[in-house]
Image (tube, rainbow, N blue to C red; front, side):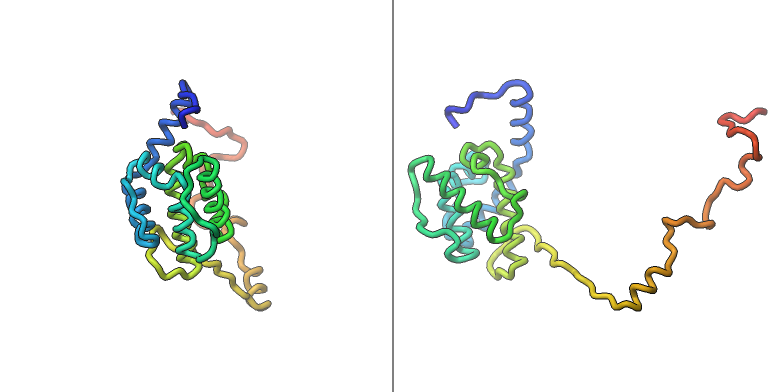
Amino acid sequence: MASRPKGYGLTAELAAKTASKYDVESAKTAGEWIQQLTGLSPIGSSSEEMQEWLKDGFVLCSLINAIQPDSVKNLKRQKMSFKQMENISKFLDAADKYGVKRTDLFQTVDLFEGQNMPQVIITLFNLSSMSLKKGFTGPSIGVKMANKNERELDEQKLREGRNVIGLQMGTNQGASQKGMTAYGLGRQVAPNK
């Protein structure tokens, strides 16, 4: 993050807007959830503290291994930057394979450089939601994702549906303009008195 130049103008406005989306309560909830599953204690719930805690990827890889064992192999705390980013990438790949949508995942630089910490927290909530959907019985945060509700209809039901005239086809019920203007006259916005 030290080599990234400070943004001005629109860049600064966008960075401020992204930073304003960070919710300390959601981060605290996510940190407590990770602690319950991994036993690793968060150092705080501010954006900087969460970034520092999760930055090396070890906590995230421990989390995905707690939800689905052996998702990330050869897990070690790393000191070198590229190894830390590799750990974050391993977590993201494991979460993708687990079923979290790619659009719900953060980018490696979002966490490593602290560029988009709100998206990191959203990813954690979505990971928990997916684990609930897959039957994980441990602690969770967020909501359970809905299961697909497919319906099997027999031929008779399908034929009955074709006979129903929907309201999109039009109706002669309700309000109409019948009797409002005589044929051949223009519509007058301010009628003559």
